[in-house]
Image (cartoon, rainbow, N blue to C red; front, side, top):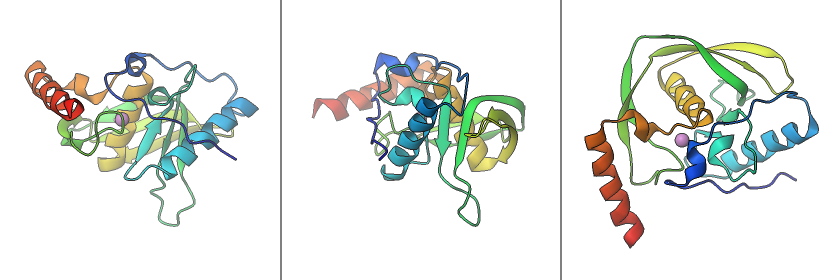
Length: 173
Ligand code: NI
C-alpha cells in the first residue's frame, strides 16, 4: 500500500532545497516514491500537482506528479528530472500552492504560455511533453519546486511583504 506523505508548509526551509536527480527511474525505491506521490495527490483535495521537494521525504528526488488531464483518464503525468527546453509567450494567471496556505493565498504569476518539457517517465523513457495554458503553468510551478523555488519568489518584494503579513495573521490564530 502506498503511504500518504506530509506536505511541507511555508516557510519550511526544506522548500528551498533542490531535488536530487534520479539515476534509475525504474529502481524500486523510486517507483515507491512515485506511488506515494500519486496517492498523496489523489487524497489531497484541490491538489493539481505535487513535487517531491514539497513533501516530507528525507532526500527528495526530481519527481513531480500531476493530475490526469487526458480526455480518457488514462494518463496521470509523472515527470522525472524534468527540464523545460522551450518556453514562449506569456500568461499571468492566478496561482496557489499546497505548501503556501492554498485556501487563503493566491497570486498572479508571470509564466510562459507554452512550454516543452523533457523528462523521463516512470518507465525510464525520455519524453518531450508540450503544454500550454493551465498545464504549462502547472508544470513550470512544479519544476520551480524541484529547483528549490516557490512561486512567492517570483513576486515583487512589496507583494511578498504583504503576503507574509497575511500569513502571519493566518498562523497567529
Ligand atoms: Ni506548489
